[in-house]
Amino acid sequence: MARWTVREITEIPTVSDGGPEEPTWYPLQHALGIDAFGANLFVATHADQLLVDDHDERNSGQQELYLVLEGEVAFRLDGEEARLGRGFAVAVTEPSVRRSATGLSEGTALLIIGAGPATIQSTWNPGHFSDIPRPD
Image (tube, rainbow, N blue to C red; front, side, top):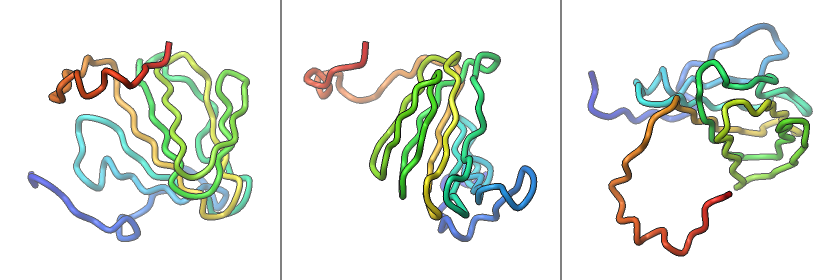
């Protein structure tokens, strides 16, 4: 197994779950050989395209991080809507939260990173974060 992998995103083969209404899906986790967490990139092929189906992660216990890389995304989080543009991050730390995401314009790019329950032991000095508040 490779010790590291470098690939241009557009050279990663895409996959499809269904038909022509699906966004472009770059399976980063699979294509880059990642085993410790899930990573996928979804790019809207047209405006108002569903990028993430309505779901929760109760069965897996997974937490997810969504990063808006391009465009604007309408997130639904337990019935509440948040419209977020490039540079915004959404962390869903409670697996039971129902979530979905819609790309509001063609080319909207959403990076999704997820992992199951585990305690991460950071190698960083905790003092680096002493002035950064955590959400309640």
